[in-house]
Amino acid sequence: MSYLFARLLACCLAAFSWLLLSATLSLAHEKKTIIWGIVDEFPVWITSGANKGMGIMDVRLRLLMAELSDYNHRQISMSLPRVVEELKGDSRFCFMGILKTPIRETFMHFSPAALLAQPTSLVTTKSNLEKLAPYRDEAGKLDLKALLQNETFSLFVMQDRSYSPSLDTMLRDLRHEENENLRLHRGMPRFNLRAKQLLAGRLSGLLGSPLEIYNIALSSGEEHELSLLPIQNEPNETVAYVGCSKNGITHKTMSDISSAVLKLRSTADFVTPSLTWSPNVFRKDYEKLARRALADDFPD
Image 1 (cartoon, rainbow, N blue to C red):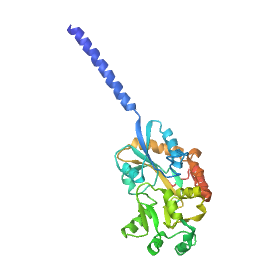
Image 2 (cartoon, one colour; image 1 turned 120 degrees about the vertical axis):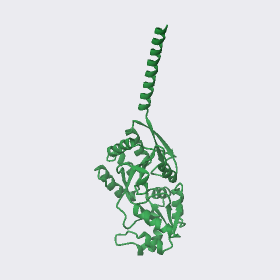
Image 3 (cartoon, rainbow, N blue to C red; image 1 turned 90 degrees about the vertical axis):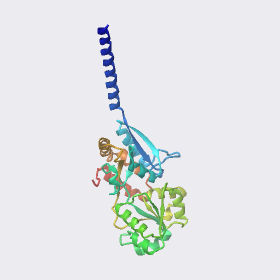
Image 4 (cartoon, rainbow, N blue to C red; image 1 turned 30 degrees about the horizontal axis):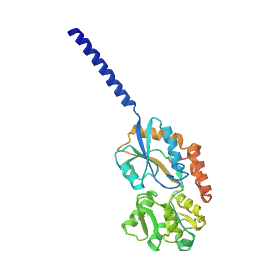
């Protein structure tokens, strides 16, 4: 009896060890999930309507997720402030098309440069051009700080958005000075409302990428009323990255994301979505940026 019991016990232990090993191997090979934030910001992200999922970043993110086939992916629509809060947290959270800043580098991993876009500019109406003339240099670039310190000019600014390192510093200084020209906003940008306010004269200008405003104005046939002014001391392009939470995304996962970005960023499928949505007024600018991207001519 003791011999049979010993044999039975040995068989049970062997079976248990095999099950434990199988479970361990299964867990080791279980796909990890990356959570991707998306922001309702037409035509960068399109979260509803006939063109849902066809925005510039929608297409690029699908290509990136397909390249990262060893991971599961989940997309969540949210406001920009929540994106920033998630990136500060400990979830496996990433965002496509974010600017790199010294503050963000304290809590985020960044991929290599993923895409090129127009530089941050001032979108205003033609009726404001005479007022702005004294603040423009020979190249037509605007001294935005001098304008806001010396004129009545209501400027719409997203409080949780980075525009560029130099503009972020300038806007922070103006907020500390309690400059009354700044119209600070948190939450969803609601560019359709901002475009209407701008065209109606309730706002003097909007700061940011002009794509959103111009596409909304195109839908109402009023794009000819708008003017786009470059800002002094700003680069010729905006460089955007894939950013991920340092607390939630491992170095291995970030390395995989970075490798995928380097593989995709100069391919036609990844580059051309920006041309799909660029209004004629910007067409040459975006074609120039597209040629640079296709030649893999990125700053870093």
